[in-house]
Amino acid sequence: MKKILLIVCLALLCQSCYVHQYTYGDGAQVGIEATKKQHNFLGGLVSGTTPDVKELANGEDNFEVTQKFTFIDYLISSLTFGIWNPTTIKVVR
Image (cartoon, rainbow, N blue to C red; front, side, top):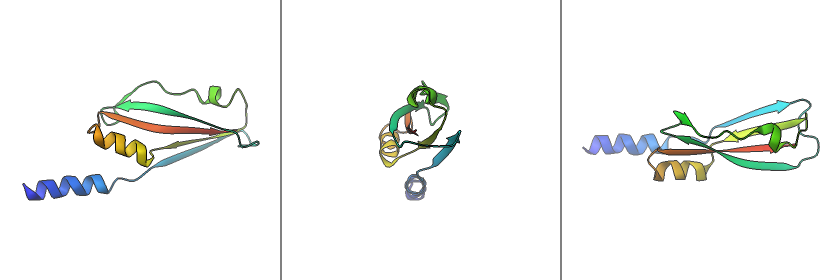
């Protein structure tokens, strides 16, 4: 039982905050940011509503999108035992 508990604790501690970054057009020009949460469920197997990045960029053609699993997102995911896994999406135009 102690080995299983140790393995579970190590697995939870070894997770990292992953980051995906995409550049559209020439990238961010002005530096205005917009942030929204994407809601995933059951360990990310089921995705809720995905924010529209074009809407967050106010129709601009040049912007950067960063999708992160922040510490707060990890904390929420841990407290709900992986039932709810939010990720943070930031658009900089």
